[in-house]
Image (spheres, rainbow, N blue to C red):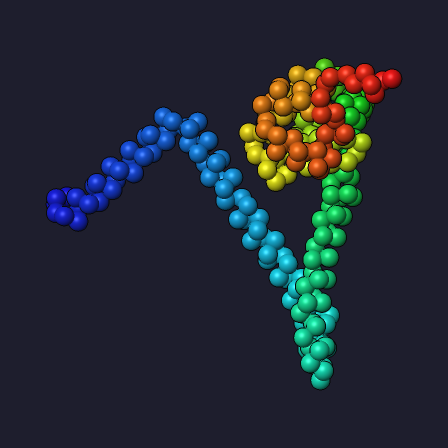
Length: 243
């Protein structure tokens, strides 16, 4: 290969990208962390674009299909009211769909997954018995029938942890949002709160702050959104209140 300027540039690019690949291979965990952080930054943008696309589809459908007659009206007021009316109905429909998913669909999916996890061991036992019966009918010895024994406790626990982790907390069949979904509660604060909760029940807001290290604004945000369940501000006993 002739070493002219064009080929030298190609070789330098090849060396550069090879060096990047080698560094990525030897620092794979760091690359994964960086990719996760990059994805966490991009995720809100992607979610916003998806929401905007869905809302635009609903809005166009309402304007052109349902309320198209308003655009052909001779009254200017009716024509001008078509867009605001369709916008309001679009947001109402969107919130209705989200409420339906949160209150009906997702809890049913969660219940189904947990039910499958609980009933799977009995089903597999019955399936094995059925296979043994079929094998005997064909003259096959029972020891030649495949054993369907699995670690169902581990499978059930993994499914329950997945479901609970997906929604952060499931209480009385209601899915509660993750802590970092609240404005002002970042990922580090949410992680500190979850780790603190594993050590035991919080006695007060004061105890919560001392054990997790979160600031006052985070505690106030959680209290305003009903997360703290009327947790007392201090652990000190009010003797006058007792009397």
